[in-house]
Image 1: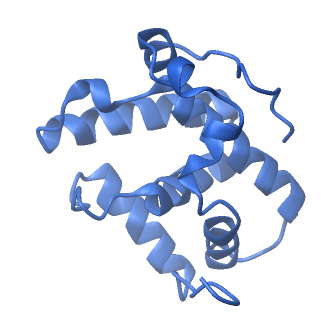
Image 2: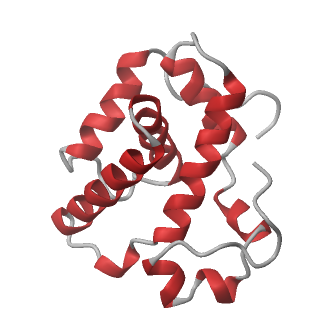
Length: 145
């Protein structure tokens, strides 16, 4: 991307539609990539505690995976919790009183690289069964957000 990233969302309704499509399992799996995941995480964290947001994501992803016949082992607890922590750090820095669409666009731009997790975790650890099923601390460097 050169310069400013394209604005994904023109208004708050478009952001809410991402969450609705995810929760109703209508979001096409080929399109439910990193950015929509971030959008859902943002909305959940803005409306609930970190623990509640994580539980909502766990349940929602399990429902979504089942509805689309995706391999259940695709869910990854450590990666999910890592990104929730990263989104929470973004929210705390972004400040209150901003439009949801503005926040979602800024988050999407700031966190567009889904490989960020590999600055903190080795491939061996992130690929482990333990990391898939429970939160594990990073092995390359501590979280700095």
